[in-house]
Image 1 (cartoon, rainbow, N blue to C red):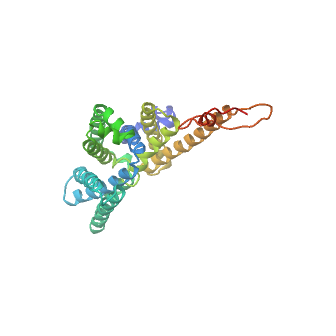
Image 2 (cartoon, helix red, strand yellow):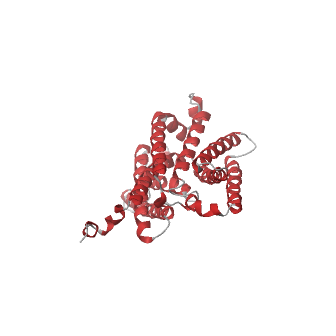
Image 3 (cartoon, rainbow, N blue to C red):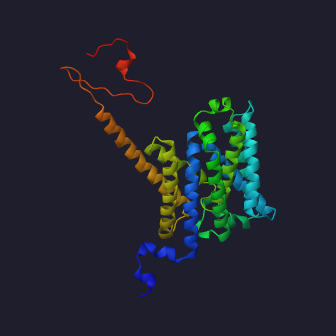
Length: 314
């Protein structure tokens, strides 16, 4: 009996170097997307991630057509798209969603048009569209590690500014925070993460990989600090599970990662519902000889009786 046969079946994929490399990339990308997703979800910027992913794919195809590394084309085009979207959105005539739609749709359409002209590119860019963790190269892994280190450092340095901007953008501007500069920096960081994760998750699924872990964490905790940690852990865990499942199911790794994240979100919804029902049950009251029931309102309002001055309980 060989050593491989003597070990558990679930350990079998880790005997392959390409799987170990893709597994490491999935963990890093999942955790990084989870952390960035917290800011994206709380600021209502989900459409920004979706639009940048499509724009960066177009830039990657343009870079390939110009005989350049796809990461170079994707990074340059992604940074340019982020700046254009940010600039257009700050102008009064065009809203943010319209700016994202124009830039992302035009960039993606340009990439598809070039792919249709150079049919040999279609197979090469299948991973960029849908993700292929099993094709992650050592260069891809080094790029992901570099982006993860730089991104973590930037989020740590500008933690207070980003936190202030997330919950009170008007107050941040009044207090002297350079809102426009911090916004630009965050969008560029988001573009860099998308470029690094393009090979791992794919342009069509990256927005989901960024949003779902953060949305799941939002259902499980109300603390911002815990939300960041839970989102990072969920992103890494669901990426690892999706990576492992894709090996046995013979499915696209990017799609399997997103599906595992969706399952986690569904479980979190059930847990959140059960928790709310228990809290509602604990706060039911009985008044006087006649039993009647009502719920407390805890989030934004006081007890209904407290809203009425000199009110008497019946």
